Length: 342
Image (cartoon, rainbow, N blue to C red; front, side, top):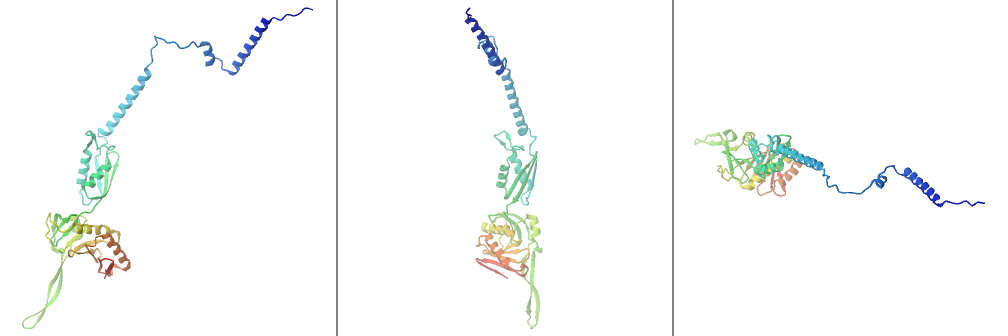
């Protein structure tokens, strides 16, 4: 029997073809044909320098142009807001002032707005105005207790304030004047009118030489009754003080001590916390002063009792025990820890 010969070379070629087909099958199955990896295997030749190649800088130029336009637009916007004058404050409204002239407040605010920061930045623009600076300037110049500065777009400023009391209306019985916190006369207002004096009359009995008697009516006392409403309309809503010491009253002269002025102003402010209205303060002497209320009854006090607030608390306790103030003529607070009324 003839033995069959095996061609080993042919078997190897057949095996290689079969393996190749199998490999391509799995590549097709699990890889996208023409993928980067496959393409790179056949087309990659490495990176080579091209001496004739020119770099594309158009992107950089476009970025530089956009940035320049942005800076220019911002600069134009700042100039329009700050320097153009379109948003400048042109209207200033003042409320709450009774003794300080509106013209004086507006004038001071305008001068503040005219100031230029760093020598060239105007402070008058709506977006630049510093309301805290305006508040400090006004409080530094005028007697102001509270103040609110409000901006309203695009040109308006509204100022609302509460004035600080620093003056009293002083009368020595002959003339009215304004007295400041130092006790000196700031200015004279007008002379006291005859109608502001009330004659208290009484009868006296006289006997002639022949023994006959007669009754004659005479002026026993003159009482100063200032026209509170009229004088406050003329000078302002300050406390009115009548000084029985009748000191010479002229501009620049001291007629009261600073402690006396401050205590009376404190009474005027603090008494509003209870249902009592101060009408007239009468200085009886260097020690005592009496406060006439709008109801006609009197509060008696002393200058050496420094705190008005303490005395007002005592007055409030006394009024809680008094059924009706219409039935009393005075409440005496001159003695510490003791209160009298009649």
